Length: 425
Image 1 (cartoon, rainbow, N blue to C red):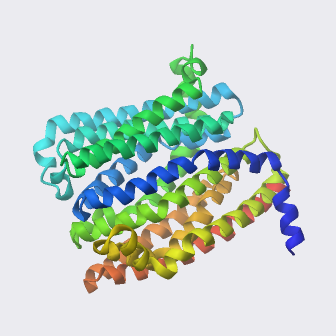
Image 2: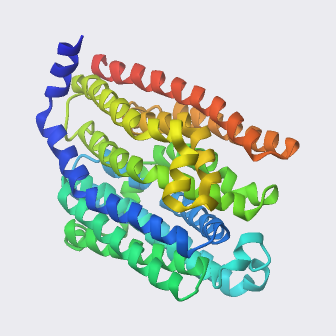
């Protein structure tokens, strides 16, 4: 058995070499991120992290909507110019929503400051507009860099982003800005990453002499992405972040701060590795990079690697979460460790399955993907309801863990099935 596994992992040396570039290039970013959390947890309070988490999730959700999922269409374009024009299409739609939110900020800011966590962040809506524009643009530029094979530039950009976020957040935290310091630090990092990726991908040159007709053509040829992939992505984001978005209606902002710091800490190394492997997997199964018959092999070898790495990273949290958080962050953060311990099976399942689900887009199964994402939303809201009825955040997390781990298992087997069908079609 082990000889077969070794043979599988030995194939596609260029594929694994590119993953190594992405992962090795982002080790510094991971180190900076973890080190900054260790410091920031002693500068900012759980309430600060809770308020920042609300902004972060709202900006992420709206930037996701703003791209229309055209950023995902970049991966399946067959020519470099088409890929660049599709990336620009995603940036244009993102800018449009950002401007709409900015207009709303000037027109209805007096109303906005009355909305729960928003009240703690000065200038919430204008900052949100900036977050939307930067987030959506970066999603498109990341896809373009992956499509061009500029993995070294992507890694370097993420390192620059991490350093910027850490330094700005720390400086503003020491200046006493509270959650606003975390928000400005985050936006500064997004701006640095966007500038870096635009330069690395030679984006301006790629779209030179493009016309509105070109962008309309790209939109028309990729209608399945906003039609099916966007609802699926919205459902996925809603299920993953429902607790932050509506949890403040039932639980304290400090509880949400503990939950989000735990998620962020556990997610940093997993996101670095998972993002690198996910970007590389999507790029490698694209029509420009591989034949249909290679997809199943890439799926198998990537799933083995993800499962092995996920076990190493998640098992300590599952066994010693409260103790680790108490020692590393201080006794006041032990509750965050308990939350991470409870949801560790979901963290592991998401790490393994999420990158592999890109197979469904290649197989043109966007509608099926949307249905599966709907199950996550039902699970999230049912779990929140269970927690609200019982008045227990722990009940919420236990219900969420059981239901979503099962759904990720289903997601894996469906993705595996279609990876084989692509090769036989």
